[in-house]
Each structure stands twice: as structure tokens, then as C-alpha cells.
Length: 329
Image 1 (spheres, rainbow, N blue to C red):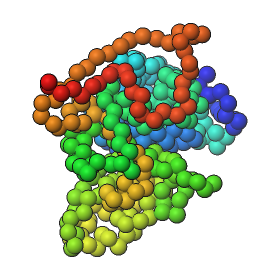
Image 2: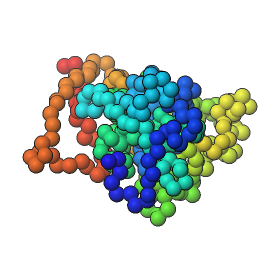
Image 3: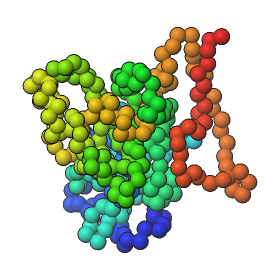
Image 4: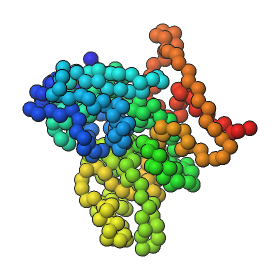
């Protein structure tokens, strides 16, 4: 079973029953093509970061699959799980509501199904769709890449945070972040952010204003809508401080969930930044230090050593694989 306790009624349909011309994957897939359904903003935030890197995406979503050639009603995906790549196979039956709309992940292009099927495979890996309700962006980033996670508490951000973001961007790291939980009943804040919500970091840019340079961070809400309303938002007057050329290049006045904000606002309104690096050289640029890698493989035994999965994971217990920064002496 892929879902245990949802009270709404689901109907399961094959992709060919949902669209007369289903497509598994499109070569022009972009980060803005996927939209969140009922749950797992953290999964969607990580997936949005993955779409920036088509070579890595091809490892997770093998492209030699389609609804035409040798279609058998099943698709396979690959995830990094317990120190190795594992294949997960699912059929193409997907849950829809009474209106025939996909309940969970969907695509802007209604005939595109790779994202929904990938999410189904991920739900199978962890037990059910229900098990994807709570998670961390960092978990999914590692599952997609086998990379090394780095978590930065933004309230205690290092002075060289912009340099870290720059190195992460140029080294093709995947990045996500999360807002503060908030205290009000509604999760939508007056500034346009969603409390306790995961976002994808989709880019950075140093711009030249009339008063001097300013560092900007570009983010995306996995809902595909609802954006930041402060400085450097789509409707902000701050854009008038840039040259016309730079303004046209960066400012996109679309309700697509993607927006810019200053680095200072980013540190103020977000609680944590997660960076997944494919190699560990991002974390330390100091001379005379090296990385030592070791891996311990074992298993939890039911009734003996298995304590169950934590409901919340703060990113500080990532022990497999274990990476230690050691001095040369």
C-alpha cells in the first residue's frame, strides 16, 4: 500500500487513462514544471534543486523509458539508500481525487508524468505516501545524489556565508532551506512566505545598485505560487536601482513561486540552509586539512536494536557515511 490513513477517497488510474498522450520525460524539463500536492514540500524542494543538473537527474530518473517503446506499465528509478544505489520499480497507476486530478505531485504540463512516478517510487522506498508527510530537504538531497550534507543555522551564519553560497553554486551543489515555524494558526505570513516551509535555492547574484553592490538569493516555493512580498520581490521598487539591462535579465514578474530576496532578508526569515555537495571540498578551504572517509554497514533488528524512525530530523546526526575534517598533523 502507498497510503494508509488519508480520509479522502482516492482513485487509482494508469497514466494512459489520465491523458490520451502521456509523456514520461521531456528534454526541456525545468525546475518550474513540478508542483506540490497534498504533502512533502521538503521532497519537492529537493527535486527542484535536482532539475538544475540533468546529468544527476538522469541517474535517478533513467531516460530510456516511455509510454511508447516497450511500454509494460512499469517504470524504475534509482535512489542512494544505505550507502548504495538501489532500483525501485513501480507501476504507473497514480492516485487522483474525485475530479480526476493528481492528489500528490503534478506537472504544469498535464501529460508529463516522470515527477509523479518518481514520487510514487520514493513513497514505496519509505513505506507509503503518508511517510513523506514529514522530512528534511537534506534527506532527499542525499537520496538523490549520495552527496555530503552541510547544514547552516542562519541565525549563526558565518561571516563568509556569501562565499559559501558562491562556492556551492559554482561546484554544482544542490541547496534547499526552511523558514521559521511561526506561531499563528495560518502558515501564510503577511510577507508572502510560508511558515515552517521548505524552499529550493535556485540561484545567487551580486548586483550593482546606485548605492553600491548587493547580494541576492533566488528561491522557489514548491507550491508553484505564493511568493515573497518584500524587497526585491517581483513588484518591489528596488529593481529601479539597477541598470535597465540587469533589471530585464533578473526580474520575472510571474506568479510561478520563484523570487529574489536580499541575503540579509534571507538570513532573517529563514532558519536553516542545507547544501548537498557531491564532494566534501566545499566545507573547508583551509590548507593542511584533508578528508577521511569511512563507511559502516549494518542493520536494525526488529525487537532488538530498532528504535523506529525519528519524527523530526535536525540534520546533525548524519553518520553514514562518516566524514571527518582532520588536520595534517
